[in-house]
Image (cartoon, rainbow, N blue to C red; front, side):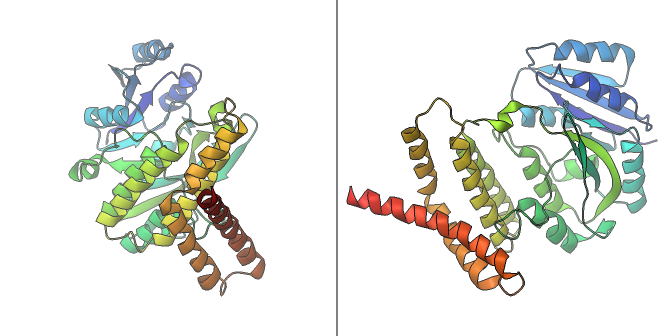
Length: 348
């Protein structure tokens, strides 16, 4: 029976870790190795890992200094001995049949990557998130159009159409495939590192299979930081976007996905502008200065102009009038704000 290596980066997760480990220990697929990479936790996470290791010989613990989730996962990949590699976040949990089902799927279809559905959970409810692809096996063109495109960004600037989280925890990967293309997480990227990993993996992959089970439980969070100010959001988002563009450029897909990249960039700006309003320690002037700094990015201006042309000239033939009006208004308001700010700067 094939070994599946499950890599779990752990950093200050004492509140959730037992639930996660309990769900993994209950897997109906028994031939697993559980690689816990303690990334310099300052709480009782390491002690919890050791307690579970005493009762489950399948658990391996790697205790290291804190270097971030990307490095922790890379350390886990290097330590993995299984034919397949999976990733679980320590504040989430999985269904008992997750890896039995996914192993059967990936073996049946002879693919290098298998995807499953997941559930977005919170304290009060659980909401399934289903892949809307119709085929159970995707070839290269389908991988680009159905998966990569919808991970990069929506087809227009309002998030009402189909998009896919670029998360790694819904996947099962062939270790041979990962090592063949030296797929690793990029140190220094503090957000969406899994999106970048998956985009690179899918670019190299010739065939992907879909397990229709809702097998992973993504806990929505988890952290009050999602509802408050996030420091360096704009600069971190830019760093991710630049890496994505470079990855797609190397694959010759950047212009093919230009509108998706533009949609993503505009959404980044809008989100970062909203984030500034949560900066409680700053006064209104400081907040508005930060907003102006975002809006003055030359790349944002160029992106908005391209989006303006695309949304007004190209999509009106296959969208209803109200949708076009709403999208045009979003772009127009951002452009008007930028132009007004530039005029005030010249007059001062």
